[in-house]
Length: 338
Image (cartoon, rainbow, N blue to C red; front, side, top):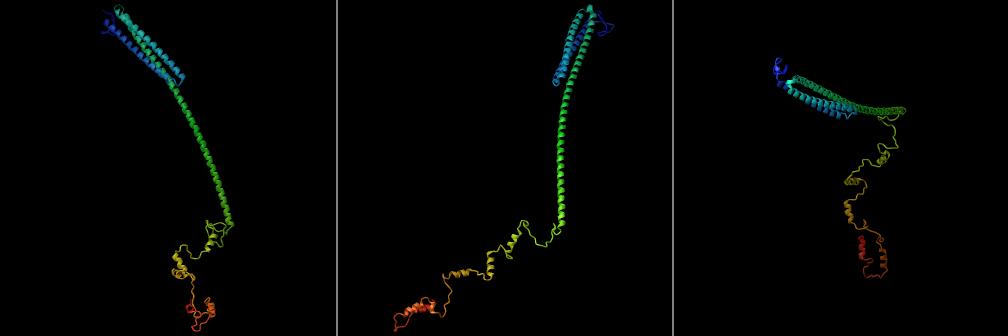
């Protein structure tokens, strides 16, 4: 039975399509609509993720964040509405397609219209997808604005740091200038010292010219005595001279005992006491003297001799014996020098 004529079936435009082919076309359209709905749902999820990223980015700038959040909410709401509408339309169209298939004998034209409507709804789904993509682009643009605001904040912070560096550099320049001023002052003081030194040199030169008879600094011969109230190289010349005058010529301070003994013995009337003299002295009795007995001497030389003789002559004389007034022992003693 001829129920549809046209392209797309198992025949061509001159042949009639069968009911099974029309039903298959309707099922294919339904599958396409379901796939479009799935794509719409995925697009909605992507939009929701983009809205979440925009909401997180908005914490840096409140105004931009509110705008992005509002745009995201609008995009999500539009996506949900479009998805619900598309799903409802797909279900309705599926019901219509099935109803038309059941009534194919009486409403093949409705089936064709339903198929066209399904295609139109698919176009609507695609249009809604484009709207979702546009909303996502808006969200991304708002996120870019947030990032731009953050970049401006970072630039402002860099500017503050640069200004601080400029202030530090200016402070360093002030310190350097102060050092330059101090150095210039030191130079001025040094120059003043040089001027004073030159003045001293000029005065010294004038003194030299005024006293031509002074000893030159390079040295020279003195024609008169040199006196001082101080010292020369730390030495008191007057004291050293007095000490030197009391030291004999060729005197030494390191003679040995033997050298000293030889020098003493060589001197005239040195009265050197030798070891031999010491031995001889030990053999002399205490209080002994070097007496030489004369050949004849007066009776008075012998102490008490005259008194003994006088006493002897006053006693009784024995003329019958040899006269021995002083005794032979006394006479012997006198003769011997005792």
